[in-house]
Image (cartoon, rainbow, N blue to C red; front, side, top):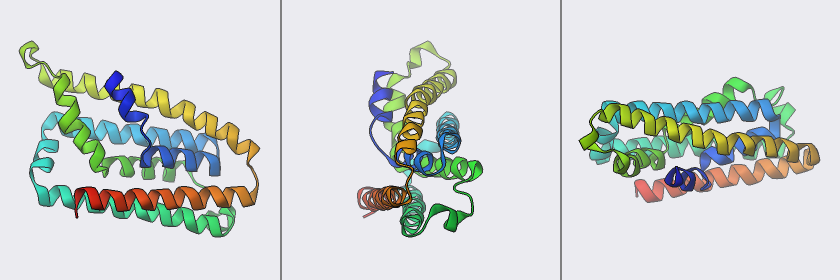
Length: 198
């Protein structure tokens, strides 16, 4: 739990996305983004259980491909944020961000994040005790623990962002927030490429 807390509390694309979607479109959309992150973590848990994470990590070309796909997707989300910072949110989307889009974006961002893949390859196995048997069950429990801790961190974060949103509910401030989070996401995408591909 301590190792998980250290991981989930370090800012990353998931956190930026949850904050951005909550501040731009409210608590419900932010909560949908939180749910999307947890679905992504559930997918990583499943990959770890069936061993595909090891296959991905052992193939540099496949891992680089995933890193590139993740960086492109996160950069695209960043560009969308900057675009929303140029004009009002309603003029871009018609009615803010939908719950389905927030869920999908957060899930894909998490699934395509090499940092999370490495977490399940480098960190999680250290907490598996082979002598106890039931390795699959242990991996599932560890994955569920990560999801619970992550939810307990990100959901209050979304609620706090919704409270801040009410204080900052002005078009000019919303544009600044979208510009800022968009730029941060693009920066994260570039960092992912540099760290995992170049």
